[in-house]
Length: 91
Image (tube, rainbow, N blue to C red; front, side, top):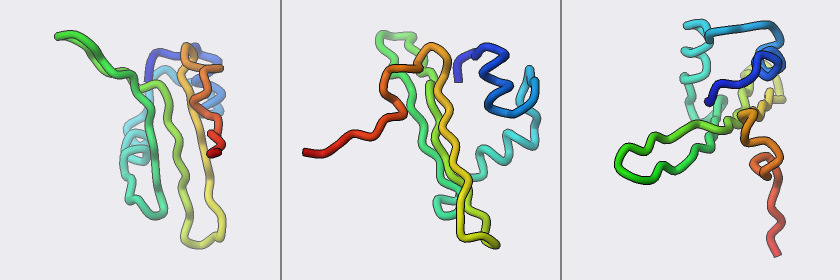
């Protein structure tokens, strides 16, 4: 994701953090599509040297010993209030 403010990182991880530890990276990228599912939103680059940027991450993790899951939705600071976390009604 983009570089977020320290308060945003603290809210996401529930403690102050400058870099994501290796064990967190492994946990975030070990997605099996059943008990751990993740979706991302990224910008679409344009032009020759356009880089994509991750702007939101939504995921759930279901633990096999429970009938519930943990859900998280994180939106980068500059992308809040743009409707990324809203549900669209079908008409």
